[in-house]
Image 1 (cartoon, one colour):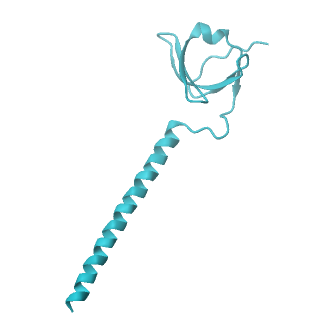
Image 2 (image 1 turned 90 degrees about the horizontal axis):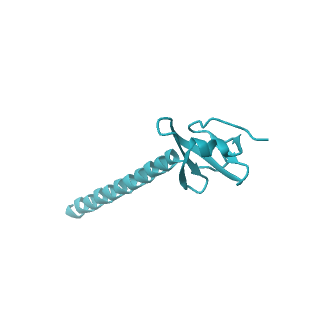
Image 3 (image 1 turned 45 degrees about the vertical axis):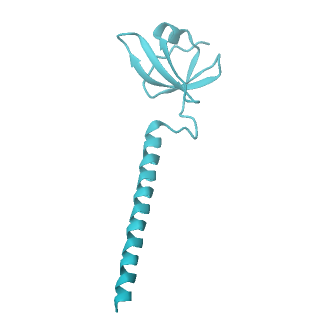
Length: 105
């Protein structure tokens, strides 16, 4: 039984014939193109005619999926860690300054 779903940005689908899962990144109604991203990160553009020929089923977001927003927050955490390391270097500098003061007494 064929299901005819309209592409919805952010919605996950499974192509039942190819057994591939993907999400819709964008829908351009003017050019009649749908941009999709597969689980492996590959991105493809389909025309609406090809979209409607596929045997699709809506699915929930796959477990363990990480989108770009998650990656950006990971990068922010890495930056914070680097910033903390810089703070540690400053602390070491302060300690050295303290040693110099103690030597003067």
